[in-house]
Image 1: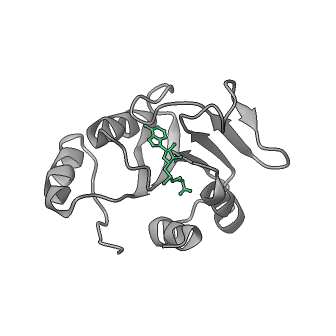
Image 2: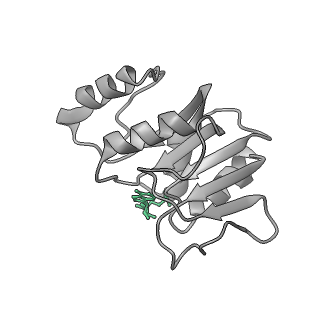
Image 3: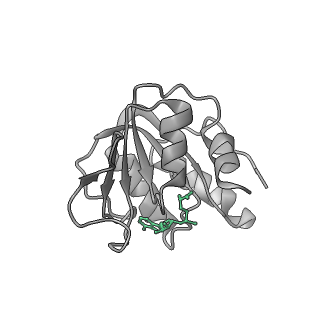
Length: 145
Ligand SMILES: C[S@@+](CC[C@H](N)C(=O)[O-])C[C@H]1O[C@@H](n2cnc3c(N)ncnc32)[C@H](O)[C@@H]1O
């Protein structure tokens, strides 16, 4: 699926205008640009682990409100309840439970994450149960292949 199509599929019709968006595992950042451009987010923080893409210190993307951070999505270097809206597209985490734990910790209570990933279909139910055990409420869950 083409990156922007994937973003529209996952982020859908949410209203994140002027909100702070947290894009986990941003890669080269094309979807972050899409979130900023099409959803008019206030700003984005985009942790991702490779220093060849991100510098060590938080840096601001020139001419925009995007900030890059080096960080492991499975152990996010932020205080609890820091973010209002999270988005994650196709990071393929080796340990998805740690990613869920980490996201649950950094998201503010009552706020949410929209994410899409390549997941084995026989594990869907287990993953859902795990999310529920963390106290996430699943509002939508669908196969987008
Ligand atoms: C297939 S790319 C997708 C990139 C981006 N989300 C996009 O849609 O363009 C997967 C990305 O997930 C990142 N990633 C994988 N595991 C990660 C982790 N534990 N912490 C942070 N980023 C991670 C990789 O560095 C890579 O940039």
